[in-house]
Image (cartoon, rainbow, N blue to C red; front, side, top):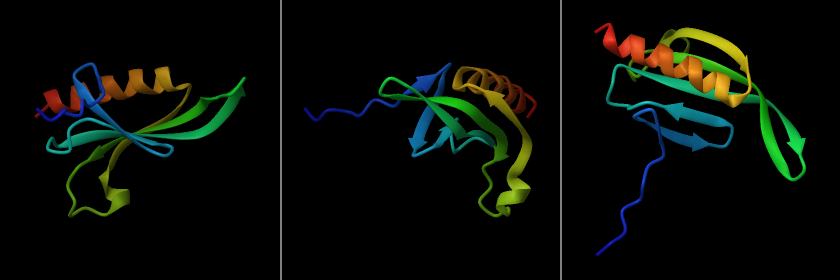
Length: 96
């Protein structure tokens, strides 16, 4: 029986990471959250996110990248960024 890859989720939405970008949400939905780690700091041998950009974006591929951004902010730390992103995404998807 083949192993299924498990997708990391946070509060019911999938998380996908590529380098310093984290995509939060389903690409099949109208909106997603894009998190970009702008600054990191070292703690022993770990890199901790210090400043994170949060953007609520449309998933429509026909829009230009700058037109996809609905809301944006910067937060200190990944937890605060994820917290804001989860609220924005939940509210945007509920407003349909």
